Amino acid sequence: MTFKASVLTLYPEMFPGPLGLSLAGRALEAGTWSLEAVQIRDFAEDRHHTVDDTPAGGGAGMVMRADVLAKAIDHTAPEGDPRPKLLMSPRGKPLTQARVRELAPGPGAVIVCGRFEGVDQRLIEARNLEEVSIGDFILSGGEPAALVLLDAVVRLLPGVMGNAVSGEEESFENGLLEHPHYTRPQEFEGRPIPDVLTSGNHKKIAAWRRAESEKLTRDRRPDLLAAQPLAK
Ligand SMILES: C[S@@+](CC[C@H](N)C(=O)[O-])C[C@H]1O[C@@H](n2cnc3c(N)ncnc32)[C@H](O)[C@@H]1O
Image (tube, rainbow, N blue to C red; front, side, top):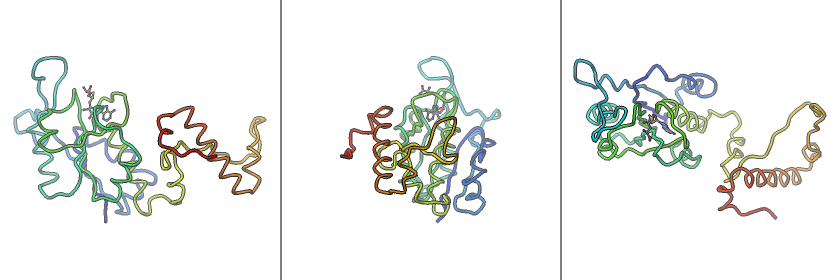
């Protein structure tokens, strides 16, 4: 089954962008996933193709109109389309690897990219949009956030990653940050590779990696550790 991504945007030229290269680009060419970028402006009915208006109640900036976005969504995903409808939004639930893993085996996603101050709340409710944030910072538009989400999903699609095992060992897959990596040369600017990694003792290597993972997670992301059974 092909993962079908439809991105609703005022800047369709931003797609596939970086997703046209490397693993995601090859998978796109191979038909493992498909991508359509839909120009929201095409659904505005006035002469100037207006997609935004001033905020009710006053204030700075502009708000994307519910009626124009609704037409774009209904055209892209008519009733019965099984794909989840996402709205990239700093007010959304933070994107997690767990949510990415849920999306990847599904039929795809319809992704709305906001601009300006955001979108009319009535659209979010009327079309049941799931608001998704990629972090506690403000982008100028939802497009880079959509690229981030799709990158994370596409690398999990069957056949996209060369070595499937590496995907299971990444940061967050087991609730911890990943251990440090080393490769040749054996010594770099006076720093050797830790002895245990060249010992050939796989049990010791696994224990060292687990301990390093826990140490890093404790230092940088103690919030992730709360639900973790710690190694002895
Ligand atoms: C300038 S932002 C609007 C910010 C909004 N006024 C607020 O304070 O929540 C414009 C658009 O960028 C996207 N965006 C900005 N930051 C984001 C984030 N952290 N995650 C996902 N989307 C984001 C959203 O689509 C948003 O509608």
